[in-house]
Image (cartoon, rainbow, N blue to C red; front, side, top):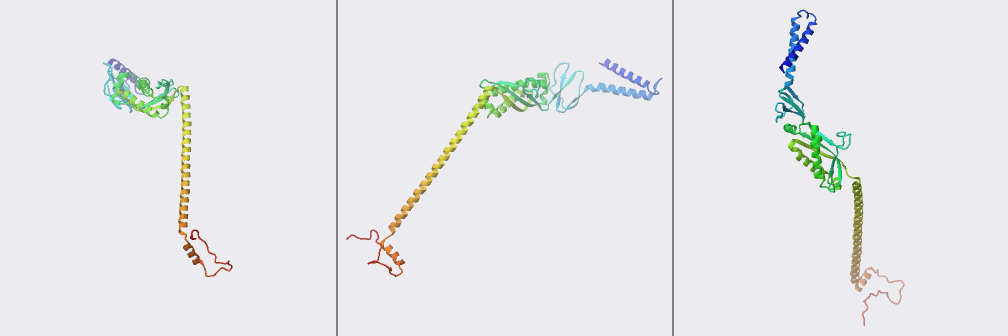
Length: 321
């Protein structure tokens, strides 16, 4: 290593000397000033070439994995963002991203990867299902060295391999316990939540943190989907008929209550009128009639009369001999 470095410096020095010789005043011994400047430039360039491999820079949102070339092991402590000194002979630095990333698994070639990445599982009825899903995740920076030591590859390869398989297993455990109609309807949100929980349980030992899991598309055999659609239509029609029957029942009950109310009101009115008539008939006596006639008589006799003064005969006023 030292010999090759000396050769490199000697080559640079020779090139600089040749350049200086061709400059004005540089031939036949040349100028001492130009020689000093050329030598300084050569030394600076050599210093840069020697120092640069000993400095590692880690980008923001990444950590550095220190790989020991001598033993082939990985340092358990990652390097944070910024500059770090290292031994270029015995160590190698591998950058790993820790920012949020999204894995899209779909059969469409315009999303995710050009290949078909859909997830295939079976429902509780044994029907084959294909799903398009996506998962956003981050890596725990402190545990990245252990992750690299386990898989020895980059994040993209881990996502397309191990993480994809974890998604399929988690979906099979959750979706495999539910009916297709339930997944499409009231239990879709529960399926997503349970799948994310299962995923986190599987990925947590590797420092992979699940931030969001989404079920984007759900596909079942056409015959099954047609049967579900027909069932939904029939249920909707039955619900409409039930609502109509309930409406008619409530209306009939209301009409019955109104009719009963009217009949009761008429009966009450008739009873009141009968009681009033009875009380009125009881209150009319002969003396009362004569008294009322006397109050209204002006003292004049009728202009045309018969043989006797007309008097009103009240019922019950004639006494038997």
